[in-house]
Image 1 (cartoon, rainbow, N blue to C red):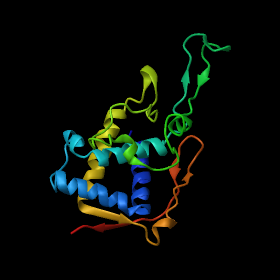
Image 2: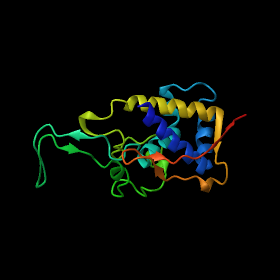
Image 3: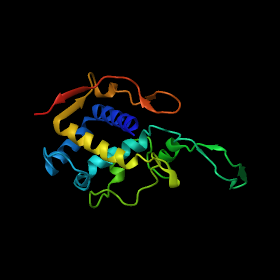
Amino acid sequence: ATDTSAGELQWLFLRLAKEPRIQEKIQKEINDRIGSNPPVYKDRAQLPFTVACLLETLRIRPIAPLGLPHNTSTDAKLGNLVIPKDTGILYNVYGANHDPKIWNDPEEFRPERFLDLATGKLRQDLGPLLTFGMGPRTCPGEKLAHVDMFYILVRLMQRLSCSAPGKPSDVNMDGGGSSLFLLPSKQNIVLTRRN
């Protein structure tokens, strides 16, 4: 789970360099709610925008866009299609996370989609976020990933700001890597210690 979590954080830090207003909003929320105190997991409730940014990153740039392969344990039927036992199955995580029937403006990075507009808290009626899989065999590292990414993001945002070395619009949000993993292309960002 550490490689995939690191990849998701790379995507998020590129986004923060590309869209400084998002970073400013995260840092303000952290400053106002927990200050410089080290975060604990229960602080997630006090930092809904920060958590929403993590969730939106997981939605818009899933590291494993086709999930991980599974095999059918028995013959199965899906509509008129017969799927024999031991058939390899991949599911389109990227497609589901970008389905306009589920997500309005799916190609837009909008953390607010995870927030209740009336209360500012995290929504409880979210669409299916399939980044960690589906069914009884979801990723065993999901909880660890949520804890690690939250802690790392908050701790870094308390101490550092990130920016593009040139214009923010020059940050490339297209993926690279292999056909199995959706990784950001290699590029530089500037980390500056906050006062």
